[in-house]
Amino acid sequence: MKERVAVIGGGISGLFSALYLAQAGFDTHLYERKTIAAETSDNFHGMIHSGARYAVNDQVSARECISENRKLHSIAASFLDNTGGYFLGFTDREAEFGDLLLKGCAAAGIPAREEDTEMVIRAEPHLNHALKRAVSVPDKVVHAFEFAAAVSAEAKMLGAKFHFRTDVVTVDLKSGTITGITESRNGNVEKESFDAVVNATGPFASGLMARSGMTGSEMMPSVGSMLVYEGRYNNAVLNRMRMPSDGDIVVPYGGSSVLGTIATVVEDPENYKIEEEDINMMRDEGSVMIPTLSDARIRYMYSSVRPLMAEEGKDSRSASRSFQVVHMKDSGAEGLFTLTGGKYTTGRLIGEEAARAVSRHFGTEFNPIDPDLDTAFQRFQAAGLVRDRDILDIALARMGSMDRDRIMPAIAAAIAASVGD
Image (cartoon, rainbow, N blue to C red; front, side, top):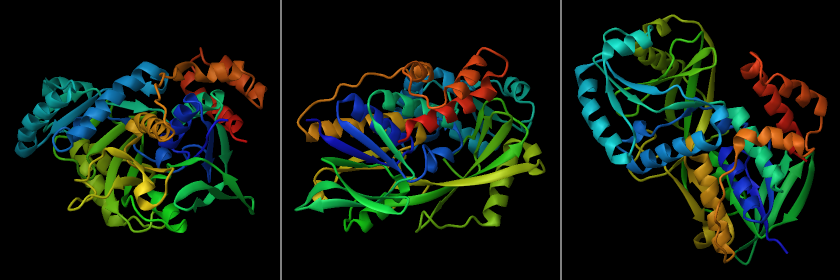
């Protein structure tokens, strides 16, 4: 009889956890109070990091990011835009920081190269012409929803079950061991038995544990806010040549440019407010790289809460962007695994490590096989798992046309609608 494992949270880390747990042979059930990637994983800047952003002060994260950058390119290239990225210095101090950046990238195995500033300005005509130094790195952009839908499709084909619009009220224990969960759907509250639970609720993980009468695995919820401009003002991902700070990334996403981010620690990830002065500050910082942003039209703003690991003496900028898979047995919850930290870039790795930890808990070793996410939609259709075949057939027929990029969200939506129970 297969062990039953519940994954709570349908963000990118939860989705990959479900995929790899199903691949490992567990009877896997994913619970999400909304739909796939509806919280933090749907509201970030859309960037797959090269790791260069962390190369100076967070070598662990830098190595994780460049490794996953390469891995995702090999298994999901159709969901990535290989835009590349630049780190840009506009002051003498920023230009000097470039030496630390290049040294850190070399130590982390990140290909970084000094570039001629005039060449960079020709490639990025909206750039501030006061550019003093430029370093290129292999940053990428991900089509986040389509990518998440492909991961969901792969997990479904491996046997994972998805329960959307289902709120997990508590994780249930008996004598210090996980027995299951209490879930609520459409006003109906029920208990489900499980042999292990993976808490992949990100910044909401501590809240779930508190409702369940547990402590441990403290987090530092940090709000990140982005401004989306009408029009695309850059071709590559642009980063300021300095330590990570506010308003220092501009990401080309479709026909828009996305400026990020503000990092503000909040007490309640469900209830927070972004101050107008913070938005103005971010806009001012972004316009140092691209002066046009100072008066360009903002289409909209969005925010999400990052699940940063709490570290003594660290704030939202200096805290590591690495992750942990914590078995909560020392907190009196044998069989509960909480995922803390991490980034969208490392969501696959987090899920793999979660499956390894659960497998070890049950006395087995897990040897993962890389999924072929590039073909997941087509295989999902061929397996007869799509509920409305007509919609997907029409969309897939356009894949070879000039409308390919515009039709991908429709395909992802058709897949996502078919994954849940």
